[in-house]
Image (cartoon, rainbow, N blue to C red):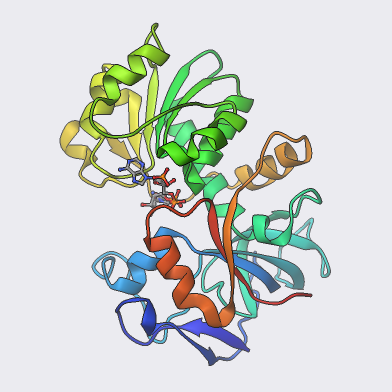
Length: 301
Ligand SMILES: NC(=O)c1ccc[n+]([C@@H]2O[C@H](COP(=O)([O-])OP(=O)(O)OC[C@H]3O[C@@H](n4cnc5c(N)ncnc54)[C@H](OP(=O)(O)O)[C@@H]3O)[C@@H](O)[C@H]2O)c1
C-alpha cells in the first residue's frame, strides 16, 4: 500500500509517499480502507522531533492519529462493527491506504468524509477535558483557542450540556464562534477585562487549548488553578494547573456523531490535500491558524 512516511526528523519536506506492507487488525481492532485522515498539531511536533524524548518512533514512520473509511478487517473480540461499515476513529499510522483503528464510531450520514476524517481526536480530547474539569449545566466555561479543532468540539459539547461558553479567537473567527452559540472575544493581553464584560457573574471553568501562555490569566479569571485545565501548555503545573494527554473518553466519538445527526455538532474543514500533498498539509497546520481541520484525502471511494 501507499503511505506517507518520514525517514528522519525535519521540516515538512521530509514527508514522502512510499510503499509499505499493509497492516492488519489485531485483537480489539479494525482495519479500514482509509478515505480521509487529518493533521493534528501532534503529528507535526513528532515529525519535527520535538517529542523525541517522550514519543519514541521507528523510522520510516507514518504520521496520523485518526482516520475515516470503510471497515475491511475486524479483529478478534470486536463486536458491533462489520466489514463494509463506514466509520471514523482513533489509531496510529493513519496516513496510509489502510489503517488499523483501536476505537471507532459509525460515520454520521450528515457529515462528509473530510469532516469525519478530523473528528475523532477533537471529540475525544474535548470530552476528556470537560470531564476533567467537571463541567456541568449552568456553569460558564472560558475556552482559550475556541475556534480550533479541540476548542470548537469542546464548545459544542459544552453548549449541548447546558453551559454558557466564552471563547477566544482571532477576529476572523468570531462569526464562526457565534454560529456555535459561543460568546467570542480576542485572546491575548487584556483578556480578563474583556471576559468580565461578557460574564459579569464570573467564569467557573477555563480550558486552555492554545498553549500560548494564558494559564496564569485563566487562573486569575476563574479564581482557582483547580478550575483550569490545559491540553497544550506543559508548563501549566508551575501555576498549579492540571494538564491531560492520555486518550480515554472514547464514548465521545459516538456522542459527536449523534449530536451531528441532531444538528448540534459540526466540524469545520480548512483544506483537503491528496496523499502527495502531505507536506503542504503539515505546513498549513503549522501556520497555527487553519480555519478548521486540515484533511488528507487518501482515496475517493
Ligand atoms: N493533550 C492532548 O491530549 C491534546 C489532544 C489534541 C490536541 N492537543 C494540542 O492542543 C493544541 C490545539 O490543537 P487543535 O487540533 O485544536 O489545533 P488547531 O485546530 O490548529 O487550532 C489552533 C487554534 O489556536 C488558536 N490560537 C492561535 N494563537 C492563539 C493564541 N495566541 N491564543 C489563543 N488561541 C490561539 C487559533 O485560533 P485563530 O485561528 O482564531 O488565531 C486556532 O483556532 C495543539 O497544541 C495540540 O497539540 C493536545
